[in-house]
Length: 346
Image (cartoon, rainbow, N blue to C red; front, side, top):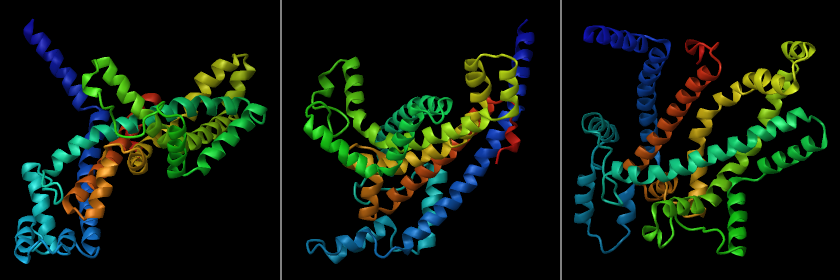
C-alpha cells in the first residue's frame, strides 16, 4: 500500500517537473541570471564613469586626516581598479550572498534592503490593487456606454489623471492633508503610539498612513489603465464572434463579461510585469514627499552619497522586480487563457 502511494507521489512530481510550466519557469530563471549579470556589469560601469566617489565628499572635511581617508579607501576596496572591484563584489555575492557594506551606514547592504523592501512592496501592492480595482470596472463602463455622457466624463477623468505628474499629485495631496489635518497623516509609516496599539489597531494604523502615498502612486496608472481597458474591450466587441453571440440571443451581460472581457484583459495582464517594476521608480517620489521608509528613498540617498554597493544592490533589486513581474504576468496570462502556450511568449 505504501509503495502504491509512493509511486503515485512520484508520478505526480514527475508530471509537475516535466510539465510545460515548470520547464518555462526554469528557462526564464536561467535567462534571469544572465540578465542580472549583464545589468550589474552595465550599472557598475555607469557608476564608475560618474565623477568622484564617496571619499571625495569626506576629503572636504578638514577634521578627517589623509591617513584616515587612505585607510577607508583600502577598507572599501576603492584603491583597486574598477574591474577588480566589480569582480570582488560579484564573487562575494555568489559565494557568501554578501552585497557589500554601505559606506554611509557602515552596515551590511543586505540588512538595509531587507528593512526597506517590505515598506516599498506594501505600497506597490496596495497601489496596484487600487489601480486595477478602479480602472478595470470604469474602463468596462466606458466601453459599454461608448460616446454617452458616462463615457465622456470618464474620458475627461482619465485625460486629467494622465496629465498630472506624480510629484504634482503628491504636492496636491500634501496641501489637502495640511488643510484637513489631522484627518490624514503625511509623515512616516506609523504613528507615535503604534507599539502600544493592539494588533488590529496596528494594521489600521499602517492602512491609515498608506492612504495618501497609495493615491499619489495610483492616479497616473489608473488613468492609463482605464483608457487601455476601454480601447481593448471596444476592439473585442467589434469582433465577428461577439456579433454572432448577440445574434444567437445571449444576454449582453454574458457576452460582455464572459466572452469579451476574457479576451480584452489579456494585453493588460502582459503589462502587469512592467507596471510592477515601474512602481519602484514611482515610489521615489511618493516616499520622498510622504517620508515613507522604503527602498526608493534609500536608493535616492545612496545615489546622492555615492554609496557604491548600496546603489548597486538597489538597482539589482529593481531589475529583479522587473524579471519577477514579467514571469508572474506570463503565468497569470496562461492561467486566464489556457489556449496560450508559454513557449510562444517572448
